[in-house]
Image (cartoon, helix red, strand yellow):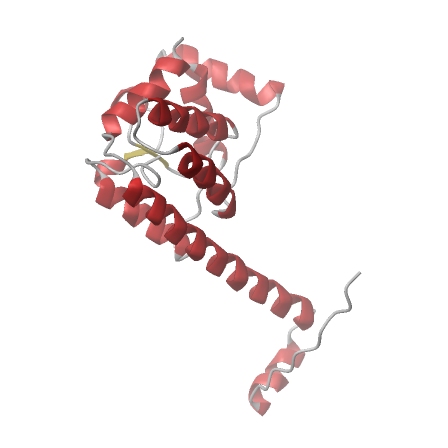
Length: 131
Length: 75
């Protein structure tokens, strides 16, 4: 979202993440639900007059071109997310991000303090402010 | 289907000798390298377009964005 909407904090960190991705230094993946979550946030931004509708629609099309991997989970895999959700008292949506990072044996980068605090002892999580 | 086009790449003699020692479909390998570079360039162009959109948006804090996502996740 920070790639589309302006505003502090963590703007520089987010830009650094994008730069590293474009340079091929890192790879980026997100659960497929990220598409709906980004679209929903852009819709909220539109309602609040933070972004023009045509810009929000264009941004979604452009994000397709950013080639971020968006794996989907099957029923069995999502049961693992349920396990994480119960263990850490998180929403399933949060858990899918953690599950994906675990499956890819990589680090989850998040700007969400609540998710970071709950998951940091159990998963490889990096707060965007530290990127 | 579109006819493939031929490109020629000149390499030093020693390199060609060493290439022969590697069991690899070099044409396929080079095609993949070219495609990767094209994809990367496409992403750089996409990123620049996103930056243009971003400049036109009104500031939204990270906390606000997180709260929008969170309120829907926890509904």
